[in-house]
Length: 201
Image 1 (cartoon, one colour):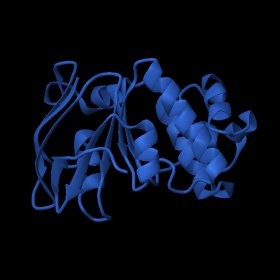
Image 2: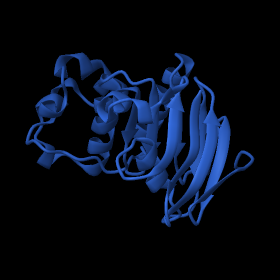
Image 3: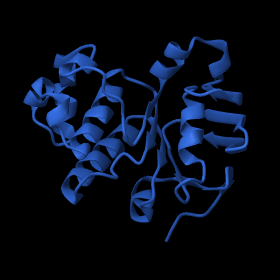
Image 4: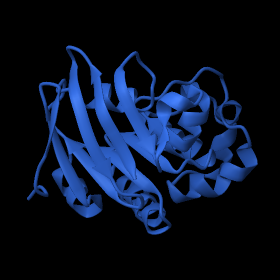
């Protein structure tokens, strides 16, 4: 179970509580600027915040941040890239080649220069980079926003497989159809407040 307890970063994020059982996909929707990304970054402990997050009863506040982020991986809509070559961002580049294929990228993408990649390629590379660390929970912020339909389908198929294997996914999306395809629990963010809602139609 992923449990968020009174997680807040005032005034942008009011105290948030949510529970997401292991192996399920929870979906958060809401307008741009409503606080969704602030919540995701707070869950990953990337910004100052109050409250706590637990995974399988293990408190985020009771472990070093790098250890927490290996368990609960956050993938923003636009990830950071600090070196010239894609492979420099992977601890074990060879182990990630199968992941690249699943997101529709060739194995040689590891040797690409980051500067020559498109925004959609970087989104898929960032997802592969996170998965290569073998996290137990994925917090994904608009992971397909820059993708064409074919690439989006590949990413969704990968996420569906991961869910079937027991991974837990917290997905932020503006795509109601995507939410329907992947989600099992749903919330809406409005002005920094989160409330449970029915599945989008």
